Image (cartoon, rainbow, N blue to C red):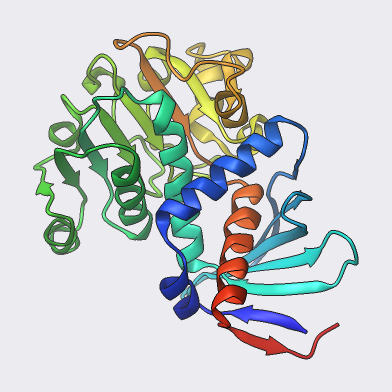
Length: 313
C-alpha cells in the first residue's frame, strides 16, 4: 500500500527545525558519497512546463523524484514520489507545496549556520511571498533575529507580510539591505533586485528565488564582492543560474571559484574566512532536499498513524 500525504498532513506533522536537520543530513550524505543527486530536467510545452528533480538517499531507504507543473493561469502543483531502495515499490506520494517552502528555507538555514556570522541578527529581505516566509521561519531557527526589514513591490502584500512577521516595511530594496547582516532575495525577478554596493562587510547573502537563466536577483558586484560563492549543485548552476552565468561572462567570477553546500556541511571548506568577508549562497533547489524532507514527513505520519493509503503496488 502507498501512503498519501496531503498538505494538511504536512502542516500538522512537520516542523521547520526537523526539516533543517533532514536537509543538513542529506547534504552531508551527498558530500560523503552516500547519496545521488540529479540536476533538474524540464519538459517544455507551448502551454507550460513539467519539472523533474530526482535523487537517491539509501540511508533513508528511498529513491525518488519531485515533479511539478507550471502552466499559465494554473497553480503550480508539487508532488514527491518515494520508492523503496530495496524493492522499487512506491512507498509514498507527498504533496509538496508546504514541504518545498520548508526545504528551501531549511537549505538557507543550513548555509547560514556557517556562512553567516554567529552574531548576525539584522535581516534585509526582498520579497513577500511564500518562499520569503519560509526563509524567515528557517533563519529564526539558527540565528536570533533582532530586526527584519522587508521590501516588496506590492504595498498591500508587503504590509500584510510585515504584520505577520513583526517586520519593518522598507521604502526601497536599498533601504532593506544596507547594514543588514543577512540579506535574502526571494523573488522571480528577471533583473537584479539588490546591488553589491549596498552590502555591509560581513554580510551573508542568500539568493533563493531565481532558477532560470533569464532571471537574475543579484548583480555582478554582489558576486564580485563575495569571498565565498556556494551553490547546491554546480552542474545545476551551469544550467539555471542567470546571475552566475552573467558574472562569468563579465569577468566577475570564474566557475572554479564556485563551491557546493555539501563541501561546507562536511567541513571540506569553511563557510567564511573572516568576520568581514561577504558570503553568498545561491540556492537553485536540490532533489536530495525534497527526498529528505518527504522521508521525514513519511516517518512522522507513520508514527502518528496519519495519511491515506492507496492500493498501489
